[in-house]
Image 1 (cartoon, one colour):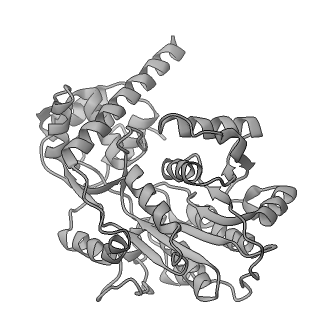
Image 2: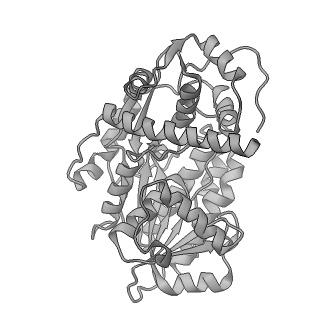
Amino acid sequence: MSTSTQSTPPTNRGFSTTLHTAVTAELLEQDAALPLDFMPAPVGAPSSDVFLTGATGFVGAEILWKILEHSSARVYCHVRARSVEEGHERLAQSLRTLGSMPRSWRARVIPVLGDLSKPCLGISGSEWAEIAAHTGTIFHVGALVNHVAPYRMFRRPNINAVHELLRLSATTAQKQIHHISSLGYWSGYCGEASEASRNLAGPGAQAPGYLLSKWVSDRLMEQASERGFPVAIYRLGYVSGGWHGASNLRGWLELHLRAFARLRLMPEGETQLAVTPVDLLAADLWALSQRPDAIGQAYNLAYREQVISMADVEQAFADIGLPIRRVSGAQWYAAFQAAPQDAYMELLQVFLQESPPQWNAERHAFSQRVSAATGARLGHPAPFSKSSYLKAMLGGFVQADRELQRRTNSSVA
């Protein structure tokens, strides 16, 4: 990924959005049609063991933590690594960011080497057979996430992977599937929505490629559920860092916060973004997955969302003793261009070429409405305190970024 050489500042004045990629509606309809030969397996002997994809990712690590904390299950963790030892270390690194390691984690976490884009998820035949024989539940959190890549880049890791997981669910004995999706599923929906609504129209062919792939995979899981596969779907909005300080360093919000902290500068202007802290979301998702009536439901998880503004961020930086000065967009961009660049700053450069997201109060109200039933199932969880949360999240975020810079400078020296 290269840094742009443009000399004029982009139009962005806050958090940024994504490139749109044009595809045909016919292609989406074709990809979203579940082949007729996909049918569920008979129910077998119950098993508490779990197969988890995306275990080293931002949300996946939180789900792994919840499984280890609240059950005695063994967890087969799908991971990209060159060896089992490397897989264990990658999983350990992900868990360490969330706090002290869960007890007996190493004995219960089984790395499964693979790749979502490959047949059978890149899993060897013997391991596929072991997982099929011993697990009773699948948590599918893994996906290729890239907010500027074209749709074709996602078809194998995000769509074909759903086919493979359905095959796994139907191998040997039936396995429950808990599928992590996106609230972007509703982007193109028109009309009155309820929990039973089906977004048959799709998000529209001009949506970002990643979002299109999430809509297609969601539709495939819906059809599988209608055929008798034991599926539950969980649609997430923007998932931000947790109260424990762990953050998605490649997220839109987090990339901007990194730059603001390093430059001690923020551009003037205002932008808003609705977020849900990852640890709150993971706790709710786990609670929903354990309900006796979980299967067959599609849960929309926007009820905890809070709207974070640039003014909120500015105040939070001041509260943690790191005041940020507001300057014009041109001044801020010039300072950004002059600052030392790393992979994260280069990624932010890509986002900065785009317009800021348009805060859409009507769309946010829609998200709150479709998620109301899910919130009711959990007893209407209280909203989180934005000021307390931002201070906790920013404190951990800044500390982690300083440590990253220290390690980078040490390796260069």
